[in-house]
Each structure stands twice: as C-alpha cells, then as structure tokens.
Length: 393
Image (cartoon, rainbow, N blue to C red; front, side, top):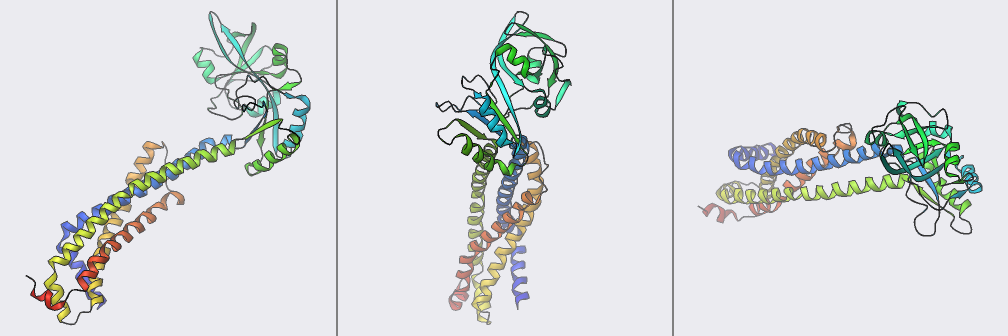
C-alpha cells in the first residue's frame, strides 16, 4: 500500500510539473543562499586565521603609563615611558619559560634624503634578535657595521631607496644593508615603513642605554599565552601596575569572532528566501487539495484511510523538497566556489569538512521546511468529509 501511495504522490508531482518546479526552485534558491553564506563564513574565518597566525604567537610587554596608553601603540614607538634594565631582565627570565624574548628600542626621528625630509619609526635591536625576528629579507643582508641599517619594503619603495642607498637620521649618515620583506600589520614590530639598526648604533644616536621601550615575546606554543600573561602580571604587577601585557592571540580571536558573527547574520538574512519558499509550497499544496477534492472523496469511499490520504500530500511536499534540495546542493557547490574565489581570493579551505558541512545542513533545513509547509494542507485533505467531497464540482 505504501508503494501505491508514493506512486500516486509522484504522479501528482509529474502532472503538475511546472508548479512543482517553481516550488522546488524556491527551496533551491534558499539552500544556495544559506549554504553559500555558510561556506563563505567558514572560508573567511580560516583565511583570516591563516593570515594572522604569524602574529598570534606574540606577546608585547609595555611600561604602564597610568594614562591608558600602555606605553604607546604596539610595535610603534615614541613612548616617554621605558622599561628599566632590571625590569627587562625580570621579564626575560619569566618569558624564557614560554619562548623567546627580546628588548626593543624605538623612537620617532627625522629622516633626510637630499632635500626631502620626513619622520619615521627607528628601531634598535640586538643582532641575534634582528636575525630571528626579521628573517625574511627581500634584498641584501643584515647590518655588518654601525653605519648600515635595514629598511622596510614600503619605506624603500616610497623613497626610492635600494641597497647601498644613503640617507641621514637625526643628522647621522646611514647606508642601506638590506630591505625587509613586507610584514603587514603586526603586534610586535611595524617595520614596513621603519628603519631598523643595531642596538649599539641606536644607543650611540639616541641614548637609553639601560632602558627599553618594550619587550616582545615569541611563544613556543600559542596555547601558553594565558599562562605567560598571568606569570608576567603576577611577578611584575604585584604591588602596583608596572607593565601592561598585550596578547595578540586575543586580537586574532576577536577578528575571527567578528567574521563569524557577520556571516551568521548574512546567513539569517539568506534564510528569508526559504520562508518565501515555504509560503509558496503551502499555497501549492492548498491548491492541490482544492483541485482534488473529488479524488479525495473517491479514495475515502473505497476505504482509503485518513492517514494514507495524509501521506499522499506529505510525500508530494517531500518530493518537491528533495528535488529542490538536490538542485540546491549542486548549484551551491558551483556558485559557492566562484563566490568564495571572488570574495576571499582563495578556495584553499573550500573542500574541508568545516566548509562542506553547510551543504547537508542547508538541505536538511530545506526539507524540514517543505514537510512542515505541507502538514496543514495534508491534514485538511485527510479530514474532508467523504460525502461532501464527492458532491464537489
């Protein structure tokens, strides 16, 4: 009997194929919208994490100024407050348990080349730290003398500087030994538009022999960030707040969370199309019940039970949902792939489980909406009075 009921439902879908296709199209569009937005959100989140992973393993320790500034912007420079040599040693002692720590001198200074003059950030680093942190040079090598420096990629291109180019900083002549590859936004050192020199050269030019503007820590394990922050705060800020520790992993988490929130909201908006499809299926099923009143009367008169009438219409709604869901899945793969390539610029994570899981989720939502939309029309058809149904024109 179940096979007969399903066959009748399939026949009705075929007879009204145009109406059925239009109803399925609404489900298809809804599934494409939800699945594509879900996959876009996942790919954007992974892409952002991938891009920022290089900065997520860093802590920056600045002197606490008491003015909410924390010793200046991360990686920037120009703070009037500094860490003493003793504070530096204490921080390094703690940080050595979790990774590699190095001190940073930084200041804003005037740079002059010919008649052009401007100001930029000057960094002073120990040579081992310079080689560890700035390991990617696009050209040249590390400073071999106090008169040679590294410059950032943007600094070089904006001012037409290359290897061997000369300029002055605070009246002292310097020579370009190497150009640092572009690093982009960073919580530790913003070198793209900066000049990096050895610690000894910095101290000879600007003083601050026993002081540091900040201490940067590269963690061996990013999961130790909270423990490292707690250990530094416990040791350094026991009586009063002396230093402020900035955890870059929290920044990465915040950005990823923001991306997820935005895409979730976009998916919610996209889900409105499924509500429109639900209304369409409801109307179609109601029309189907109205047009087949006499057929329902005949079926009831020959002994067909209410439950079986109910199942005929629910099968119809389910078939429409399955057609729409399958089409939606196929088009979601194609449209989602193109959409993500345009919006994110990479489909590196498109075929991961976290990305493709949105397809069955969207299909399940579409099918449920189809079945729910068909419940009332099916119930109404099943509960018609057989005598009244047979009298209908």
